[in-house]
Each structure stands twice: as structure tokens, then as C-alpha cells.
Image (cartoon, rainbow, N blue to C red; front, side, top):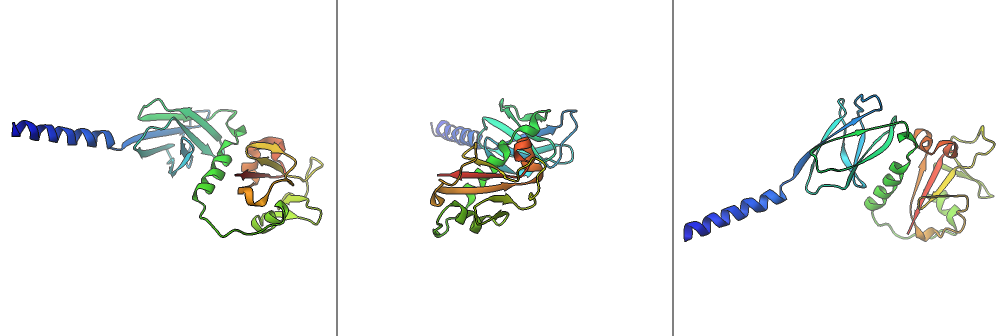
Length: 209
């Protein structure tokens, strides 16, 4: 009886470690011509992983729990997502529409919010006062006209940036209460290009509580 009891405990221990053992998934990222994409950033669900793809477009990641979907971002190729099918070898292929997907920058804003340490509250009279203090990449004149530095001249007749508040484009930000702001991200150049013509003068992403 003692021998059976001991064998049962051993089997139980191995069973426990089998369920909790980390698994390694290999992710391969390719462009539309199926060439490997290096330095691609990987997201498991909406959480950015610390590892990036190597010169062969591959990255190996150890996980405890399977994600629902996997995403990849490349500055040259854009953003692409696939559903996870519980395979340990997944491939993500960018296509012609990948560059028009701007979800990556919204995920980064959320990532910064999660990691941001609590700081003492500061008082700001309005959102323009807040942006003057918190966003040195912006130029705000006495009439509260906002420009992203480096976009003073526009070929489209306007130098106003694209405002995105909680995921929706808007032209009205004056009613935003500064104490309700969780994060502000300013996008330029290739990151702003993900928003097409609308992002020609830069993009300002605001997330509120």
C-alpha cells in the first residue's frame, strides 16, 4: 500500500509540473513576397513582448498560457494580426493593407499607461496648459493652435495634426479635463503615415479615464 501511495504522489507531482511547464512558440514574420522581416515587434494578445524577430524573421517566445491572437509590427511593413491556433509554429505575413492599420500605436499608448508610475497630481487650467507642460514635441500659440514640431508647412493647406481621442478621430479637444487624461502620444513620420493623408501633419493620440 505504501508503494502504491508513493507512486500516486510521484505521478501527481509530474502531472502538476506538466500542466504548469512553459511552452515555447516559434513565430515567423514575412513580407508580402514571403521574405523574412527582421526587427519586427511581437504582441501576444495586446501585450508587447520584449523579443524581436532575428535576421531570418523568427523569434522564439516562452509562454505559460496560450494567447487568443498574435500580432507583429514593422516600421516598413505595418501591423498584422493572426488568430492563435494552438500551434507551436506560427507565421505572420504582411500584405498590402498592413501599412494602413494604426492599432500598433494605440497598443503602445496602452502599454505606456500600464507601466507608468504614479506621480503627484499637478493642476492644469485646461488641456492646452497640460500639453504645454507634458508634450514638448508640440507648439501651442496664444490662440491654442496646436502644431507638431517639424510640420509647420503643409501642402494640404492646413498644419493641424490629427487628433484621436479614445480611438476616435476628432477636431474638438477643448472639453477634455486634464485630470482625466491617462496618456498622450505624438506620432511623426512613418508612424503617422499609418493614418494616411489624415496624419500628414502628425498624429496626437489622447487616452482618457
